[in-house]
Image 1 (cartoon, rainbow over the protein chains, first blue to last red):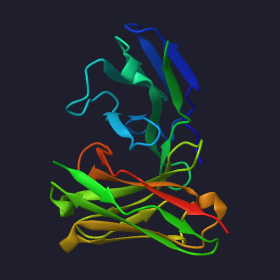
Image 2 (image 1 turned 120 degrees about the vertical axis):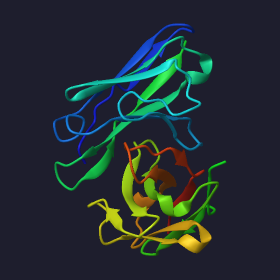
Image 3 (image 1 turned 45 degrees about the vertical axis):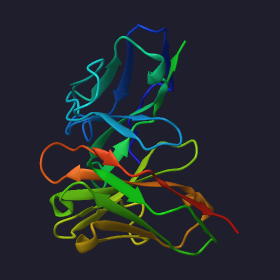
Image 4 (image 1 turned 90 degrees about the vertical axis):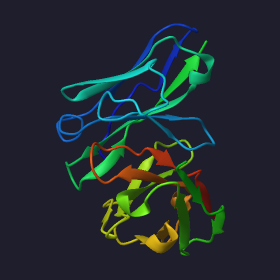
Amino acid sequence: QSVLTQPPSASGTPGQRVTISCSGSSSNIGSYSVSWYQHFPGTAPKLLIYNNNQRPSGVPDRFSGSKSGTSASLAISGLQSEDEADYYCAAWDDSLSDDYVFGTGTKVTVL
Amino acid sequence: QVQLVQSGAEVKKPGASVKVSCKASGYTFTGYAMQWVRQAPGQRPEWMGWINGGNSNTKYSQKFQGRVTLTRDASASTAYMELSSLTAEDTAVYYCAREPLVGATQFDYWGQGTRVTVSS
């Protein structure tokens, strides 16, 4: 499976800004829009960002996404304790068989 | 409100098949696709395939091609995922997720997940 690479962990104190990167290639991020999902273990993933930088209704504007070339990033500003979760980027990939691929995941810890 | 309610946990023996259901409510089932994603313990989510709720067209991940079958019953607003020839590596939580048929990719609502355990 094609890899969207994320740092395994990120952390910050309450109120800080945390940024998570997602590195891909021309067959995925370079060609398709990126989504970001928040996942608390034992619950269903939640869509945070779609189409690179769009927030679904109900998602706080503390969460923002961006994309440049073959990389994307998710920023969490004003970090809160309830933001402690796993975060995954995702995009379509046409390198082999048009699969939808998820990133390696980043665990965000609020110190 | 949009809800996706999945069937309960399953325990299967190697070589068996499992069929997971996903009942949708709160929206027009035929206007959306249903995606299927699984997550094994300690692993990233893994996309399995999708089915068009309107015309039943399907697309499968190459990894699962030949082992997974996605179907839907539009009259019951329910989608199904059947996975055959199970092995221990198929132990995971299986999710359905709604996706609009038009516009940017977004798995905007998810089911609660169905835990499938494969063990002899």
